[in-house]
Length: 217
Image (tube, rainbow, N blue to C red; front, side):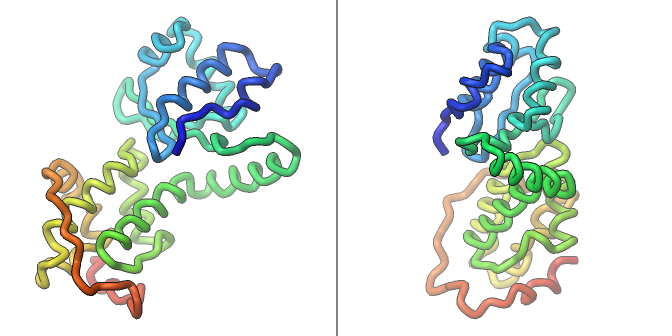
């Protein structure tokens, strides 16, 4: 994803110049998953604004749905996402779409991140899990709420796919419940990522998404 600021936002005269400048900084810092991890102190230094003024400006950005705080990893470090980064024209039609999208996000604010995680697991482990299963939602959302990112989940998947994919006894554990269980998550995350080996002659064809349900618990 290109790290570009939406020019229509920067040209909006109804927004304070400082607010537009902060939005530009968020765009430049966002990772490939459209997330930014930063403290208010660091953000104020980059933007050359007072620390006391940052909450006010961030409140404006969030009220405009330009920036959204999704987690707080510790006392200082906050995790933000840019929900409208790909919007190009703030017309009435896009505003209507955003309203519906915002209502959906309020019900499940981690839907997109969870889909990315499960899609990656399916790709790497040759599975066919869904991101809407109740147990999967619970096992992933609890970590996203604590500030962990999509990249953290992908590292766990890479680590355990490298360890288990070609092991007939452990292969069954390549499922969301086992990988992201509270007793496993941080241990798997802190393991060194091994070089992945592509499985031979394995495809998604004919896989049933319920095949691995017996290994969830």
